[in-house]
Length: 173
Image (cartoon, rainbow, N blue to C red; front, side, top):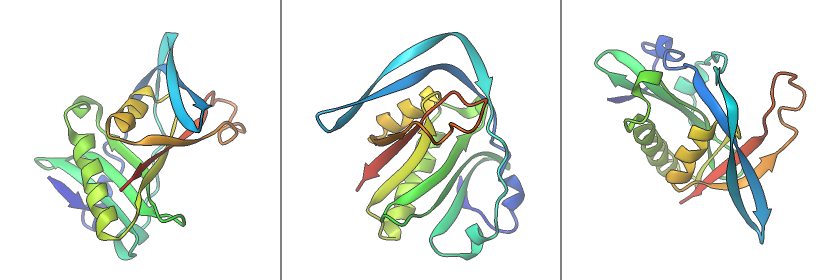
């Protein structure tokens, strides 16, 4: 069941935020005005977990912002955080699915909810950013008809522990 975040379920926001395995990286290339990519596998995979986010009540109260939770029984196992962006796209700020439920269609269901929300709010498409070391996320977006629109090699350059680049993905309606 997918439910919009309210004051009552706001406490569930960080529940599905769990680690993922970093097994390699995406290597984007830009040729003839088209982004493509290859993959490099790491000899020693490792786990990464993003820090928990603080969530503002503005995602409940304001138009142009929303969080949707995916529940199995009474347990929150997925979420998508989305808002309007200046360029006419809806920006997916975060999408996460609990480890034990990945690759079961939950991310796809949340993405479809974001598409529905974006269309209902008259956006021209969806956009998001992920890191090139989050290979499974990159595969997920490519499989769901997102295309690379840009790469930023400097976004994480001031974080000494980050050995990654930002990839911006777009899905135009």
